[in-house]
Amino acid sequence: MEALQAGFRKWQKAGRDPGPIAHFVEEHLPALLKANKLDEAEAVLDEALKRVRAMVP
Image (cartoon, rainbow, N blue to C red):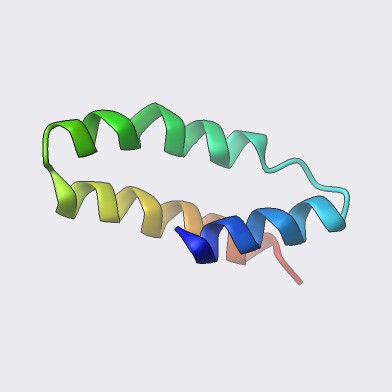
């Protein structure tokens, strides 16, 4: 999660909007955590981080 937040900060410094990725995480993560589906929750964070890193120079 810290790496994802760091990526969001880099996006913001570069003038990019991390909103779409943040929305993706917010849409999926809470329900998975509530259902104790930790592997799936981790996969959501991994996908979000992958998307952030693909767009950070």
